Length: 89
Image (tube, rainbow, N blue to C red):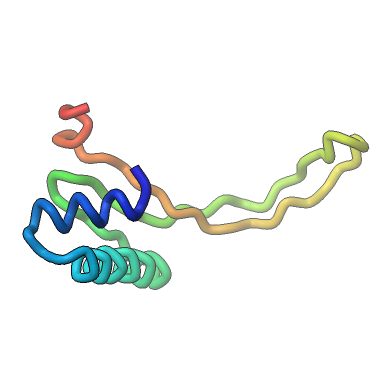
């Protein structure tokens, strides 16, 4: 399912227009992004938890040349499904 299909599904289920559903979905994504940028978790009971994890800097190898390269540290967005969601799969 892509974003357009999700917007259509939300609009049909909620009885609202696709424009309104698209605005709601965009607002949700912005709220998740803002929360994660501030270093906080977003917990949706019965669905899951969005959080930020840190990956340390490390050394890697260029597969073409075999040369050792430095890989920078970075932050990653993580999602952990709740037991309820996992049980429905």
